[in-house]
Length: 132
Image (cartoon, rainbow, N blue to C red; front, side):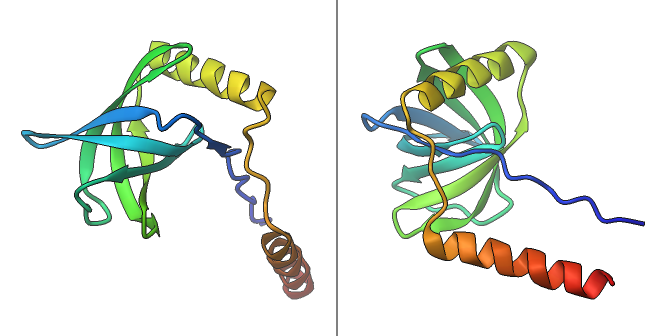
């Protein structure tokens, strides 16, 4: 059985220090959105959360307000924590798609670095070699 390769959703750099609101339990935290994709993104908050912590995010985009349930992931870097969307309504999903389309049009897509491109190539070559 052939293994399906998951394609990573394109990521976009968020300009203008866009503000977000995250709720975890009864607490609310203001933060800044750094990266965004159809599957999640990265934000900076004053508080760090353990990987697996669930919360809700609210953000204003050029396409309208978006709210969604999120799961915090490992730290993306010392300044930002990654998250993934775990639940989002159809209206919010359409607004997200529209906003990302506009970001693509503005050239905000994050391209892989040459090292990341080389790593991806090496992974593909090794994967093909061991499938034989």
